Length: 255
Image 1 (cartoon, rainbow, N blue to C red):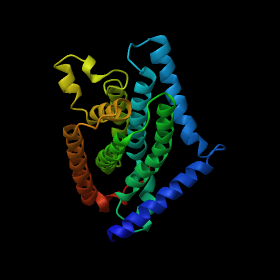
Image 2: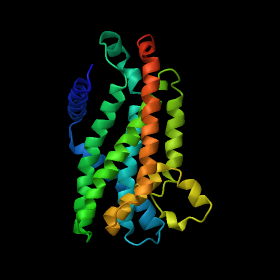
Image 3: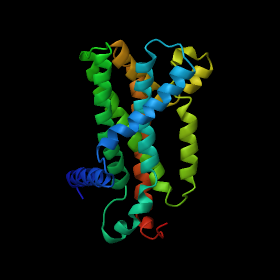
Image 4: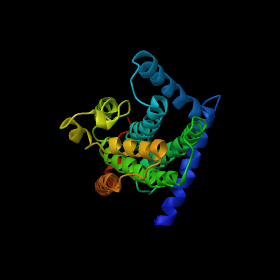
């Protein structure tokens, strides 16, 4: 199949995925907004009203971190096991298996963009006027999209053979949630711990997103290159694994 054909399949299946998800609930697409809002509200109450973290513009600081993290986390968790549920289709249709996790990530990205638009409106209302530096978010979002796809491709390619990896992923995400700088600025962390935490590409993403949205500063291009390089490495490894295992997926019994 050509790249154009794969792109058409991804776009068509993404639309179908979003439509099916909307039809499974009474409120439909409204849940795409309500679910992250409930998530954000819970952590706002816990970390602001209860703990009273002393950070300037903490509400905006927290929302930026949570929304970027939620996009990353939900995409990884929901997409890692997607091949298991597509085995029957792989038996019937000759199509590269790597398409399915990308479809799931793309669907989650559409939902993220809706919530991100609401975030921009909220920041505007609370005094953070959009400016030309906001255009850098196109670069950040694209790089994160590549990073998520790379990680998901690597995980989704091997989860069908070792389903227990899904449990490890869930616990790893929980651990990363508390050390990715969502609730604290990285400059509050002393060295050498800061250097170790900065290995995490999502910490750099969140820090640079705050620089753009809250401080009207361009992102650190060194950080962007670092995240992009990791993303491309994961994509290369993930696609290589899918190519290696392509013919074995259809032979697995669906669990």
